[in-house]
Amino acid sequence: MVIGAVLIAVLLLSMPSLLSAQRFSAIKGQVLTDSSENPIRGAEVTIPQLRLTALTDSAGRFRITGVTPGRQLIAVKRIGFSPVTAVFDFRAGDTVDTDFLMVKPVTTLKAVTVQTAKPFPGLAEFERHRSNGFGRFLGPEDLEKNSNRQLVEVLQLLPGPTLFRSNVSSSAWVAGGRGQQNAGNTYQLEQFDKAKGAPTKQCWAAVYINGSPVFQGLPGEQLFDLSTINVATIAGIEFYNGAASIPTEYNGSRNTCGALIMWLR
Image: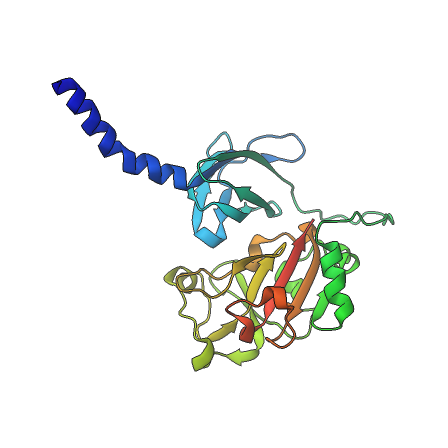
């Protein structure tokens, strides 16, 4: 009887941690070079929306736990390689097992080959928005021409967004064209963003990737870092300067500051 009581007590004590683990997801895998699939040590694997980060070990392995179920953007960065981004759908209690292949930036010019653009899932919605005549757009043809540039540089091709680069890190952010904040759109910067050099009192634009919000200006939310996206992975960009022009399906909490919508390949 005593042994049985002890076992029951142990099970009861462990149940909260077990239930907590089932509420979250995890992701693990390796970061490798694209050419020879050698492991890359010290690569930074980040889930920007959740502020979760892991560094790869000598075998290129990483693991991130405590991932909130749902669609999440994963960003991989390492000095000397082009950043890699991907979007995964996480289910509670599951662990995503995946590898990321990184390539070194191309510095030599190659002959231009004209190819038919491959369709991507968001192309129809992107083209529907573009045909409405509101907002500013960069299509597959524009992004192909600028695939070797940083996202913050590509967004400078669009009239409307206000762009900021950090003086202390590689980070960059996008705000709407309405200037600084006012009482109606106040957003308190998190200490994490302040440490990365983000300016205060700006009207930060909402950010969507493949139709899902990754930044809406909610309390405690981290700004979306433009440096985590590789332009070569983007098939379409939309920017709206204010609430009046944003498509109704993207009427989020930061409408007054505009919205940046990106469609990944």
